[in-house]
Length: 326
Image 1 (cartoon, rainbow, N blue to C red):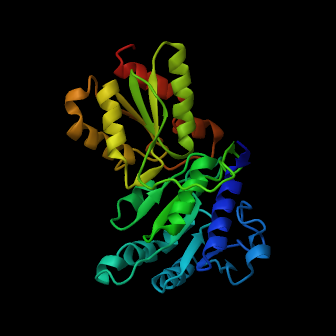
Image 2: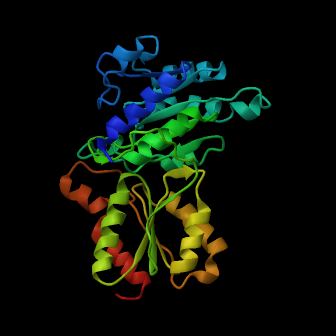
């Protein structure tokens, strides 16, 4: 199977869907003439023209509102935020309009729209440009939230998202755009709401998503060297969350560690922990552990960045702790 970059997988998904459906279009800051801040939309203006690849002013609230109005009238916008840190400015439109329109209209108006762009930490970008927002959007009924972990996930999930009739938050990572992964040349779709068991194991379950899944993968390899068999689950979709796959894994391994890039308070790992103790409590042989970012605004200093984020050593230590090995 061929290997392509994460940015190429996202571009292929958008381009294929735009060829398939003329109602699909892309809009955002610098997506057209500049071909995207991270070159995700490279070549798309030339192929689809300025009516379907549209540069916007630096006004997230404004172009989010325009796109929601377009979606309510039967068009399928893909809205690129240069970063989800800037999408804070559009949250009124996303939360008060896009997520609620189907209910408020009595089922008359779907909002088939994808809001996508980079999310989370990305090197020395400091506190206001290094935030993970999955929990904030997942908290809102009416929104679906997707965080792909590799090129394969990115293409298959984005194609499904573009075809979906509900508003979707599609959260990428600028630190992953250059990552390469295997992607089929033939068309494929990945179902929204179904996790991927990346590695089978019997001793402990590791759950993660997005780019921080790499840490869980490496921790599983490190544990394997010590004779510990870890099952690794890639959530793929944050809302709807695949509770079933997590619970069934915990029933087998009897132990759980959740690895998440975001802050600990009101986190996705908190939700997973609550659900597991509700539905698999009798199977747990140890308390659930979670490894998250430090509960503080993100630093600029490389030393503090390294200290703040989940790493392999912390995950391995947590796993051995619930296995009562340290």
